[in-house]
Image 1 (tube, rainbow over the protein chains, first blue to last red):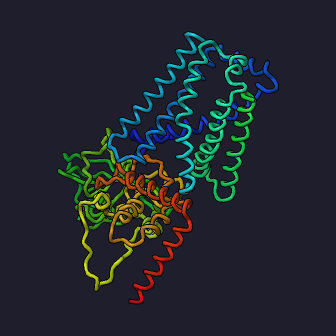
Image 2: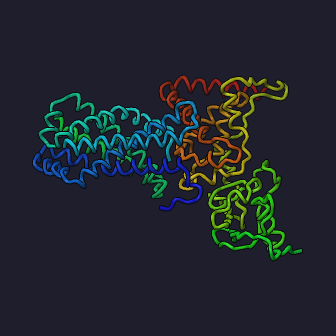
Image 3: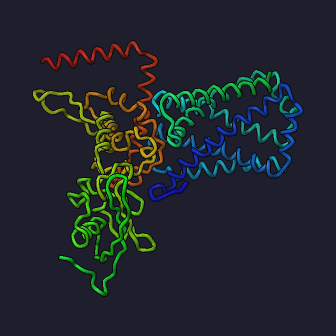
Length: 117
Length: 109
Length: 269
């Protein structure tokens, strides 16, 4: 995908980031649900999956997933505020704040997982 | 491809999930500290009506929310239309709700 | 009648889209750089001195008629009020193409029919409430509704927002920013008598709920209007309207019937 001409502005990038993070989360969900449902019949297999989280690259992937979730969450709050609250001209600032907040939350998770985990 | 009805459902499920996402991320940051294991997760969730309702509502809301989001993407980027699009979205919603509720039952039942 | 480049005159490399329908290619022209030159001046210069067959559309040349919009270096702009100096890229070149999201008739001229048909489909047309005998309705300028209507009113129908919108590009049914902006202005106008019909018209598969708030319409609107805010207003009012219909369908049906009867009586009078 190529970002061209009219798309080169912050709020278009906020749109594409919101869409792609949502898409990635939706694709991850079936795997997430399936692994958890192993708890019922195959607890050893669940433990097997959970032990993968000791690998550094799985920890980074987890960080990525938490980032996608928290970024999609903050970005979604911005969109609902845009639609339902009186208009604010500071949408670019809010979109940047959503990105920063998503990064802060996922970094907390990452630190928690690497320092204590 | 998004009508008023789908828009309301999309935003309503987002509102329902807002506090649930905060709770979910909070639990993750807390739970990951001692490493993840089946025993640790199940010790917290098994037999808990609170977590069953919490994650049950989460799974249903996300199934609807994701199906409507994917509906827009499937129409705009994959060109799906009409009956095919409607069936695809119902399939996604029912599939995600089924898998999600099964997962909730597995860890809380 | 040609006005050739003088040897010491600075020139500008201009790529212009030539063709009809889906077929076409870019042609390059060397145009002399002049003081206070607009994009429309460049296009006019080429048509007058270099290739008389170049087809383009303009009328007022002062940013009022909304007929000269084109894609300039990939961005939709009103060409009569866009200065060359302000927008040429680093290489000093200029690429001019017909407006995006509309069928090309020839060269830089697009077919605007779809664009205006969608205004009608959005019920973005005035629905009068008074006959000539009833006189002019007084409008209170202070109300919040009037302020909202005023904020959306200065549209010149240039279709720059329509060309900038990626939802229009990927969902041909989508009514687009201009038509929805007009609909919002009418929803807030006390003189308009079809609020419910407008809200219904913008709630379908091509309606306001498809907007993803990319805000390209607002960014590129030459009159600095904010269709995204107008569409957000429509999303709120249509959602309230749909919930009302869902919660109290009987009451609404009765209100609709009463209104229809009242309209019929008025017509008989």
